[in-house]
Length: 134
Image 1 (tube, helix red, strand yellow):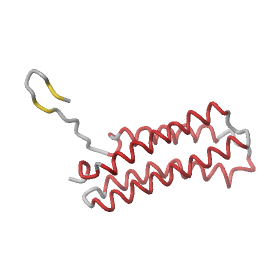
Image 2 (tube, one colour; image 1 turned 45 degrees about the horizontal axis):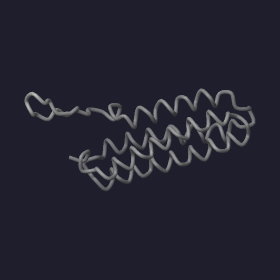
Image 3 (tube, one colour; image 1 turned 90 degrees about the vertical axis):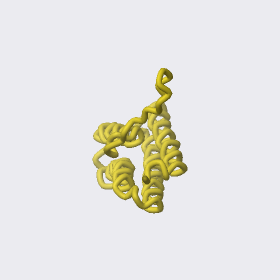
């Protein structure tokens, strides 16, 4: 952001992975999936329920690891790639939940859209890794 009166650049300081918009979105979406998965049938407990909870949470844990290892650009990018992989896995599990009629089409579209937004942010972070890896 630029203060037009003084022509100085004002930047927001990111002190923690929790300050990243992508982390907040991934965390909130994982918590939403957790709440939804509580209504899944008991026979899904050790398959779909565990898998979708694990993969959705892993997006956040990989972002946290990327943040801590950001002084090494290659490792940072690798962890962002892992986060994207977990997001893709979560989308696949969401597709199964839709096919099994555990969620509505509307719910699927909304959650899938959130993961598409997460992908876009992760790709931007990868492309601008040097901004984060200082």
